[in-house]
Image (cartoon, rainbow over all chains, first blue to last red; front, top):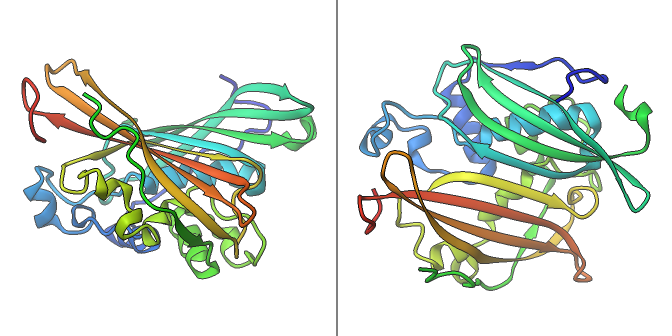
Length: 138
Length: 148
């Protein structure tokens, strides 16, 4: 895994709030109460409401898209590892996993991570971008 | 046990609305993009998660499979774009199918039940623009049976 080649610095987000969760829920249409209602979360066995998994996924995708360009993204995958709780701060980061060429198009495969400031992994991801040349990396 | 594999809902139409795109961009930290995005620009990478706003009734494959009533957690999500992500203003013809169902024994001794649903997003001419694969998981009680 490379961390050079013009890879941008990790991005810090937070402390995340219930307002962040609700804003995402309104945008996505996922109004599951365990993401904003502590009582509903408790009934499902959680100590408090927690972030929808697609929120840190969106943070990771945004980090990558801000670097290489939204219109160049061809794949994004996320695996949800752990809950993100209110008031936690996360880092989004990533790097280059592979460069490859298919039918005259050049691609960059990235690895992505979202973890709390104390190193607890929230989600891991993978993304593929189509790139014109090495100059796209800088 | 693959009771629901192959189950497919009816086609539904989803519009990539500018206001919804801006909401999603703001919520996920695409701050530079929010104020400049316009018709024809690519939508955010995870925007297709808003399909739930359009996928109702007989198009709601997850519900048809009886999964809304179960304690399914989101395990994985994947988007594949066959070109730039769908542009703002696009009207997408979409259909979802339960493409995989499987079980796995966890280290804890619990049995896990996974379900994958794939959604295909097509343009007006039928060309494939994007695919979304959502994987849900539930923990079954010891020896199988119902949800946790």
